[in-house]
Length: 224
Ligand SMILES: *Cc1c(COP(=O)(O)O)cnc(C)c1O
Image (cartoon, rainbow, N blue to C red; front, side, top):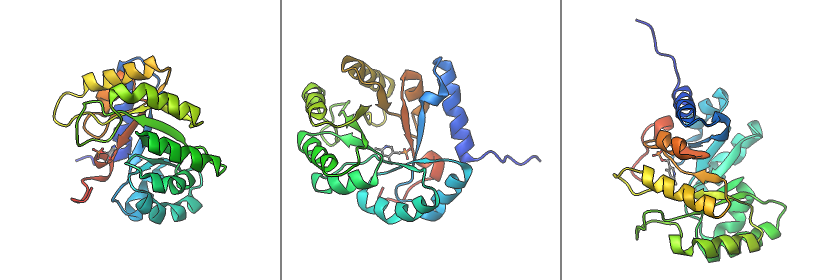
């Protein structure tokens, strides 16, 4: 029997490449964010050794415990905050992360603007949209997006684009398409959308950043 020595990372990368090709997009226009939340440093290191450099965490506290040491060894790591951010942690997030994906309300825009003005760091920001209008989800309401974009621009935030988490257990494509349309309407190019179960669909619809956890690292514990 021939051993299958393709790593999970290689398999995901080739699936992204195939989806990009189907949509006549360049694979270099899609950034794979390896979502390492809940996973220990020992699980992250093999991916670093394989060459993966872009990682996502959903908590400031957990990231600040895991990443400073890893970054000494791999200074070119790019760290993305993909989870909700409390305004009182904005300064810490600006210091630690290169990109912040869940900017979803005026108070957070204000806090991030102040934190950036007070430091020499200006991480890229994605504005999160509650694309399925779900009460329990983060993200600004679609109706509130124009005001949030305007406020974020006025506050000097570097806006990379829009981010969403579509409703679970339904076909995500219409939601991805809606996010892409909203981004176009606002002249924004980045689209942070697509996770382990739907990233190929997201790539065919224009995702520039896919956030992939369990397909790379295996299932998370219940706390995730
Ligand atoms: C955990 C998480 C992901 C990754 O989810 P998987 O299904 O494990 O790929 C992506 N985006 C956000 C915002 C997350 O919290």
